[in-house]
Length: 302
Image (cartoon, rainbow, N blue to C red; front, side, top):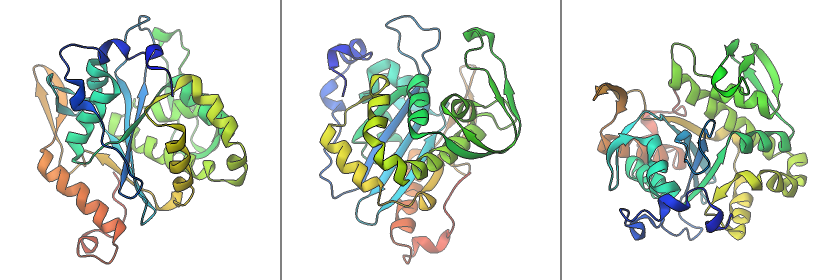
């Protein structure tokens, strides 16, 4: 875990307008469900101390008893209440109060306690995939996009079909959103890729390379996980079948509304039905014989 004095979020954490004691995450005792916020930042073109908005927002939720996991990807244009800052897109929370405020905001949206966060940028993602040795993915279609704003460093050029993606190609796959479905399709690809990455991490070769993998990504990662907690969650992760991970877009299509607020296109959702939706999703997965499971037998995905 990076020294707080070296953190890119040091200044916003010390914001006098934030009651930081209210942002302390709940402790995980190892028996109840654990929820981890995954934040991916796009730091291209920013000044030295400028904080990027969250380019990717995901939550991994694991039940250590049933050994079942859920992977939620949150649409970054979701318009939510950010504690002590009013309403804004959810990807702005991290710029206002660092990962702690992002955790609190996501926790309020989903109605579940977020105990941990892991933050990285493009370079950290590339390092992780390369350290694993790449990931096999069925690319659904040709994907091409060029952007001179970053001197074409992160242009996208992928061909349809089964491919073994290294770090740079994998980043292209999870970032592409230049089609009719835009961020909806992008978040679906991100969940698909993360499931494939988990499967690769669980392979025998990757288990042996785990210390090297952690060392490779360490310079690019900020987290509130201790080494001991990482080990506990790592052991738990190897008990989870990647093929059984339930993935879900948040907000789900049936609950979201697209609106124009103050001239900006955003996505809104009523928190109460969303909380009920998530609890029912947990119930149907952790207790497949329950009444809640009868309503939906397939893992929910969009």
